[in-house]
Length: 132
Image (cartoon, rainbow, N blue to C red; front, side):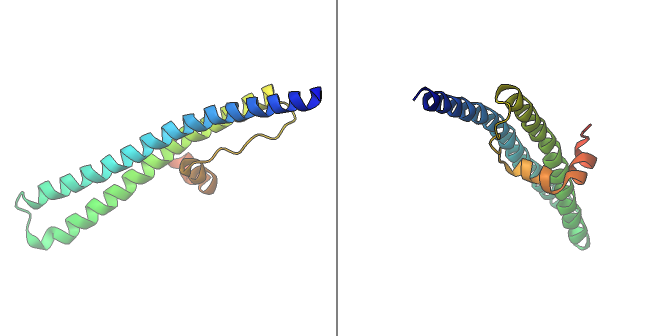
């Protein structure tokens, strides 16, 4: 009976430990979503301002193409930068989990930022400036 009670307490501590780090990653993810939304608004605002500043109609497609390309590049930069932060949080979680709960399997932390880092590690390292 004592062994079961100790196991349940360990499970609860592991769950709280993972939840803390998942919340930290969630905070980074919210900042990433907000910055991506703002970047789209800023690019749209710049496009609207240039539209009403006397740009020739023949330059509309060029302007639109540049705005879309700029937004895509900004999105890549922001996502990779925030992915680096999420990856550092995950690394800290795994290190602390091993120290506190040696030999037990850690819970997997999830976020779209970690998904980007797992699926496109070279891109994140290149654009995010990760030092490893």
